[in-house]
Length: 317
Image 1 (cartoon, rainbow, N blue to C red):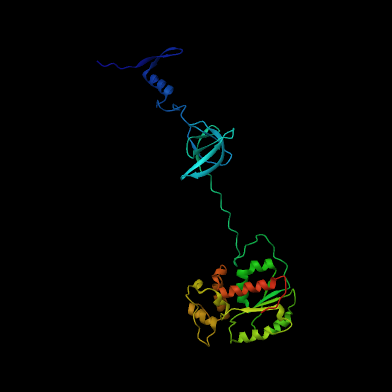
Image 2 (image 1 turned 60 degrees about the vertical axis):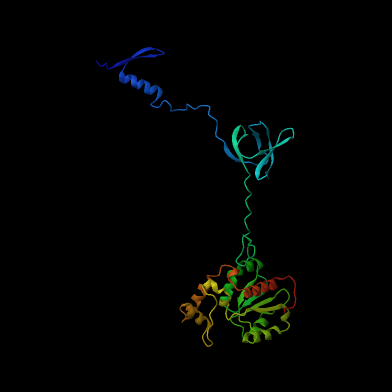
């Protein structure tokens, strides 16, 4: 014979309750929940240690010995990072870094101090000089630098523009050196008003060489004039060929316009002046810093800048 329980008596603080089976089940679930292990039954558990990068002055207690003191230094001893704690009596003890410490009563794992951040490298201009952020351009000096044409001027501006603005040096175009002596006389160099000149293809025996030799002997201006150059047919060639994917600049047959020949070699349009201008902009866009230029040009430009900004006068060689 089977017996089916349809009610139960539950003793409470207020007496005995007569409950149906379903009410009995609901009573126990509401009282204890469906999971007897749920809730915060683990009260009193030990708190979790947290990592703490030790720093000088931290007051730390070593749990095992009860030693309490301020951190005076950390060091590496026998390949192990250790911390030195000084108590209020001036006594010191050394402990290995790691777990087993308290700070303000909270357990911590002492770790080596964070490495100091490296100072950021000073920003550089395209010429390699230290950049001066926020500095306004200086009022233009009386001294000038002359270059042969627009492409030379654009290259100098791209690499040395920041330096020249800070120094107050203006770069002007010559549009060729055929009448260089007249250009020098027209400027009239004198103390405090120097003239630096950059000449393309300055190689012994060339037309440019003869023109410059004549201009260098021009008195009384030669003491305040410095004429330098580079050996390249055009300033294009002062850009390192690797920037254009070349191992070397190509040889252009005599009688062929040099720039047009370069464009033809590179597979670029070269029939019009506009084509040549676009080609130069493509070349100029590959120049990011002085490192993209040949050393001979760099040396000449730097010397010219030094010459026109020098506070003293002196004869040019």
